Image (cartoon, rainbow, N blue to C red; front, side, top):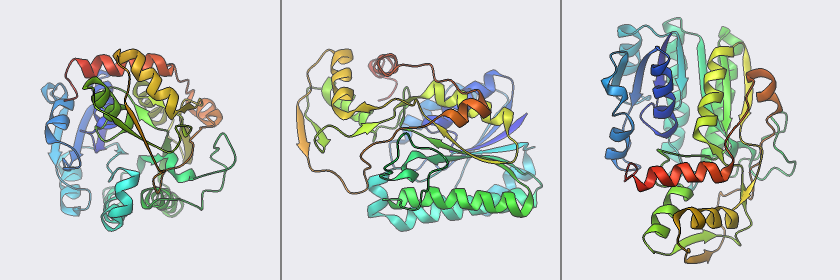
Amino acid sequence: MNYFVTGGAGFIGSNLVDVLLAEGHSITVLDNFDDFYPLKIKIKNIEQARKNKNYVLVEGDIRDKNILREIFTNNKVDMVIHLAAKAGVRPSIDYPEVYYDVNLIGTLNLLEVMMEYGCKKMIFASSSSIYGNNKIVPFSEDDRVDNPISPYAATKKAGELLCYTYHNLYNFDIFCLRFFTVYGPRQRPDLAIYKFTKLISGGEPIQAFGDGNTCRDYTYIDDIVQGISSAIFNLNGFEIINLGDSRTISLKKMIKTLETEIGKKAKIEFLPEQLGDVKQTYANIDKAKRILNYNPQFLFEEGIKEFVKWYKKGLGK
């Protein structure tokens, strides 16, 4: 198969691409190497992939229709795996315009160019942030998600609606996968597990927002990649599917787990809750189990062990 992966040099994208290449598929990656975090990190992410003859890297932006058309003209594309997005809940509050531009106009451009070239299969990366402060737990795909509490979350909800529109109008097959707090090797340096690991290792204080009782459904990267791979194989019609671990870990427990694995005590500075942060995420994964045979394998402690091992090797610096 020939896959076009947007955002393929990032955390989730590069891990997925490595797996697809190992299976013998041909991959075209588009990434704009956004300066949201250091370029050298993404370069390191794709170091091995670039040695593969079935790998093509295009540097560019999903907002540029000409680049998208060039990719479809020059490469056979059987399916699009759309992971590119302006990421981060808190920054989206400060820069909502660019989040809407990248996450909505970029996605719309991609769907339009796909239609021009007769490619009607897509995996769309959505987010658990869509659920906001949903009072029903665990979060189900059938829950109403009309109350996003950050511009980032709103763009992901709108992206799902765009995907459904193209399914309805043009018979696209699209699975929208709602990722729940993904962590593991190659994690973005702005995310809590990475930041805390760096600061605790260096003996520097960490900032914890709230009282430490906020909870996240942390999902190890290998489990997410398995879920995406299964979605690729089972893609048919339109579905929204949660990909999480279906267990919650409090902020306090996350810090304690890092302390144990790093072998150092954290210096914690508690600060007020941040705008846009949800109190908890918690995935109902019954649908993923039924449709994708999804079965997350990594306990949180095991995943943290793997992440810290990767970090200590200097691969994330």
